[in-house]
Length: 141
Image 1 (cartoon, one colour):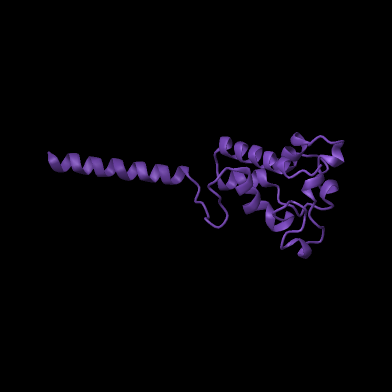
Image 2 (cartoon, helix red, strand yellow):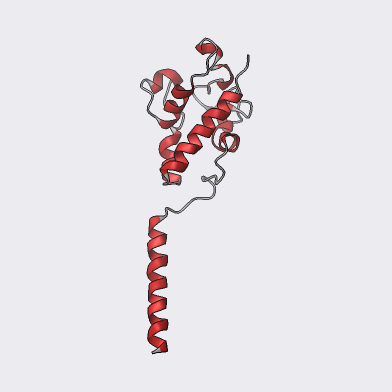
């Protein structure tokens, strides 16, 4: 009787591990950032092009056909009001005329990338909200 209980427990544990393993996408540690803070996300995903200061002078900026936007002047260019929803929409890939804004579509649209790396819609939404809030802090007067 003890061996039947042990066998059942082992089978149940294997089935649980298999189910959990299939439910989660493998996370490539070089692409996935666990932190959801805006600053961390910006440094990890955006700074290589836009620079740590957001001025469009990241280490790979000169290698791009179209220079990255200076994110520090978004409010200034919008009559002093930070265009929070538009920035979020651009990051999600929902903004019509994305090519016109960037001159090309070289900039990754992070919403789908974040959803691929982390299938939790709530975490993706929070990551984008925090990233937008951080970009807002970069604005110069």
